[in-house]
Picture 1: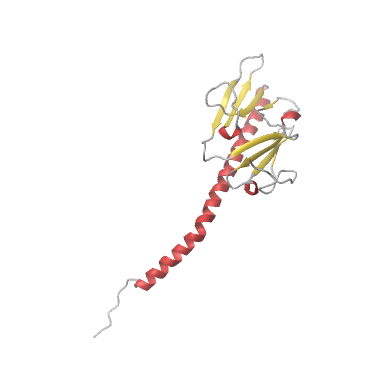
Picture 2: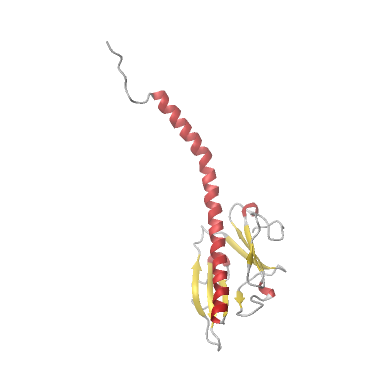
Length: 185
């Protein structure tokens, strides 16, 4: 009589496999959530920096003043009050014509981070105007932008807008370009 061999798994082998899978998921799931939150912050920061670079470029190429300000869902011709709602780019054609909204980037409430903008002196920034000639940004409109999420200041991102219109970022999260610790509301 021959020995019968089955090609399947035993119950013990299956239970060990499930236990290893549960252990891996227990370790991987929190890391995945942190990764997603970090990428959400990075993405929002990169979109805002890209919009500022676009505004600076439009100002220089069209020889007009271009303003970036908080998004206002209720109006296509005025700014909002919170950068966390998104942002809009307005071009003010020469000759005093009405501003023209060039682009709007609304953010979804609940999934987007809190965005705060303050001048180097600490005053809140309600808009930034890029000029076609130096200084590209008035000194009173330069400063730090801070992006925070529910995890607090240790994970917050920031960048600094300078009078040249260029943007610099710190090498790590949780600090300003000058190295000071960030605070979140």
